Image 1 (spheres, one colour):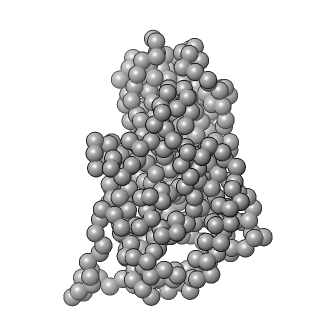
Image 2 (cartoon, rainbow, N blue to C red):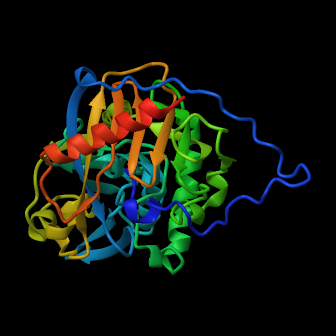
Image 3 (cartoon, helix red, strand yellow):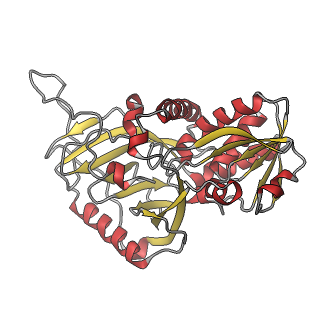
Length: 365
């Protein structure tokens, strides 16, 4: 899920590629065509919406006391929970290892809770997972799952004290995901295209780890999209309909216990038997721990029937429209509604997303 404010212009901290003079940089080989998404009303199979847990100052990974217990927070990942999951799970693990406890409770069963639980198990912890909802009923199940750092913090935070923490999480997670590529985890490599009326450069969120997003730039006539300019880079996508059930299965196979339970207060958490708690509740941390900085940002999707020949993603930053292919359907997105708390699809947003993507697809050559 992508951030309109950061990506709308796609002219960020990294300057555009230099002109092709004297044979350097080498001339880009034009991409003549790509298979088109079959976009038609009869191909729509469902609509969905999720609430991104956004904090202007970035995600939280820190420890605090709750009576005689220790709480390790790991929440506030905005639109890149899947992307940062293993990275912030490792940070949370480090805080847990600094305590004398090896019996832990993880609160929350989205991608942050599951990766944290698995990381703890792999380092000798006995873990019980508490959650009000399990996959496929979590917010993470609605995520597109593309490895892209977006909707993570205010632009002014990307150059401040938060930057090294973000860089550490991104780089670790990117390495950790690579060996998981394959059908069993639902992780694969795809080509990500950015298109727009101006030369495409790395957005500020991407530029914090520029080596992960090596752009190939295309000028007019060098790509198949109905936009003047384009750029592409390789990235991974973790299909949450496969990835989350696999993590849950591994968790239980390694002796993890699951209790379906909702918590309404810190006192409820203090009553748990485990001495070490990991708060992976996303937006739930606002009520449980009084984090008023957490803001829900609604993202709405339209999903088309699967199409096996589509092996690329695209983002039109000017119109804020994006497409991702998954085994369970073609995901069409393009909404960013800060402060909205309902997950009911909005028919006006549905129409804008569908018509916008149809215009892109019909304009491809």
